Image (tube, rainbow, N blue to C red; front, side, top):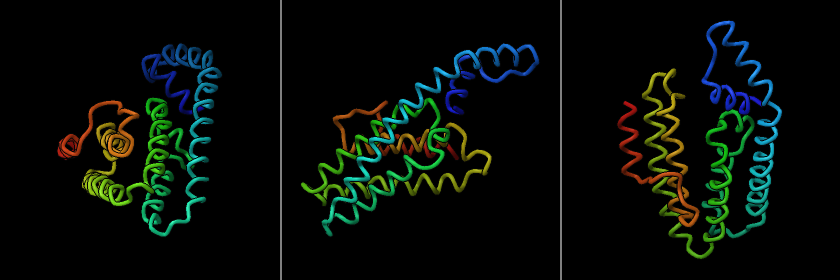
Length: 187
């Protein structure tokens, strides 16, 4: 419901700063909140079903060779779908989660064919993820959740899609170089 309210408030021009504006905003949000919430719940239902299927597949794989990759996939799944993920992700990015989860499923499909390639690509993403974490730690706490900082995190998700499931496509062009440039702009 919070994500739906955020979407409706943004569509109405953002927060209100006076009583008349608040009343108008309240009426607009109240009129559409049920439908907006229902749409988000339907999307979340799909996300949870896909996450459950990935989790089921992870538990069903017993190959010792694949354990490091499966552990990484499980951890990544836990960052995408966790308590509070709907509000944290926000209505703008929530529609991307099914694609990110499909990319995890494609990665699982390809993993037995070439675990070495998966390890190499995982390392590439992990290096950038660590650089991102370091950049966040250098930022003042108040700026760590600003849109430019959050955007780099989403760029990492798009990079994962690009590397592990290119056929799904990315929201925008992404590369190591573009991520590093965005990281440099955070400073």
